[in-house]
Length: 316
Image (cartoon, rainbow, N blue to C red):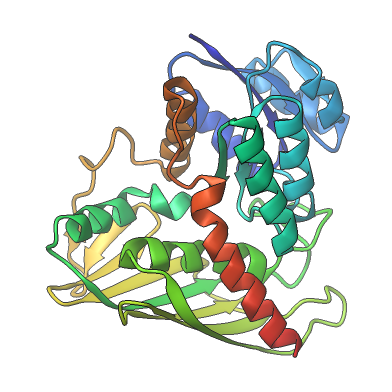
C-alpha cells in the first residue's frame, strides 16, 4: 500500500524529511502545513505536494492522510501529536516530544488508547555511526564505560539551521540534551539512575541558558558527560566519544572514527547513510507491520523523565 503522509513545518528540518522520503518507495506526501502560506507553497511546488495550508486541523480532516510528520516548534509538539492521534492518524514528531513531562505522558497514554504508531525523531538511534556501535554492543563486543559529548552551536539570535529567523526559542535542555540523554540509556542498555546539571547565565533577550553541563550515570555504572552551548564560535554540531572496554569511537553525525581518528566504513550498516531517511523508513515500516517502532513514544519517555528531573534541579 502507498502511505499518504502530511508534513507540518516547511522549514530546515521539514525539508530534510522531504528529501529523505523521496528515496522511500510507496510513500506519498499529500499535504504540507506551514506558518507562512507563500513560503509553504514554494516548498510544495518544488516537491510536487498537492495540498498546502497553514492549519494542521484542515489537513487532519483529509480522510486519505494516514500519517503526519511534525517538524514544528518545540512548544507545539505534544499538543499537535495529541491532535493527530485523536484524528486517527499515525504520528512522528521531531525531537523533543514535549517541553513539559505531563504533556509527553498524555501523548503516551493516548497512543496506548488509539493503538496508532507514535514515534519521536531521536535520530541518533538511526545514524549509521551510532548503529555501528549499537550492533557491537548487542554482540557483546563492546561495553560503554563513558560517553563524552559536546553539543555546540553559535546561536545568540532566534535562527534555524539555514540561518533564517525563527518564530520560537530553542532550548538546550529539552531539545538538544534530549538527543544524548536518550542515546546514552539506549547504548548503555541500562536506565539512567543519577543525573546532575549546571547552567550558565540566562540570556537577557532569549530568556534561556546559553551554556549547560550535564552528568549522567546508568544503573550498570556507565557514565556520560555532556557539554552544551549556544555560545561556541567554532565548529557546530554534536560530537560523541564512546570510551569502552575494547576501544574508543568518535561519532560525528553519520560518520565514525576510532579514537586515533581512523575512519570506520559504516556504509553497509543500513540501506542509507542518511539518519533522517532511516528514521522515516522505520516509521513507515512500523505502520505497515503494525508494530511499535524504535524510538516510540513509550520507549523514549524515560528520557523526558530525566529532563524533567534536571529542570527541577536547575530551577531549585
